[in-house]
Length: 101
Image (cartoon, rainbow, N blue to C red):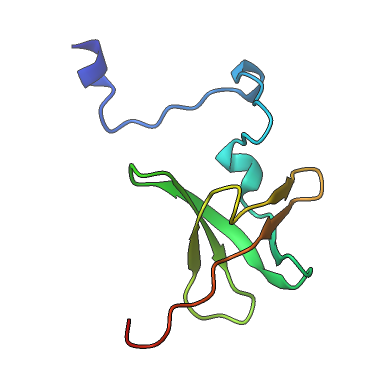
């Protein structure tokens, strides 16, 4: 009954009340606005969202030249390095699928 009263409400927790993250764990808020870079340092865009639809996290970035946002699996293989202090996320996306697939 108490939980039903909270449906549809947003909950906010002061940062000081959040537990520390383990290695390779991040709070979404810390990733938002970070620069997304390829392994070679090429700027891919800015991180705009992290989603979870039940099968694992998905990181989304907005390319600087416009066009649709890009969503990638948030795994160690695709996201090999995160530097929170520098607001930098290194991505190694899989090659694009051939046309018609």
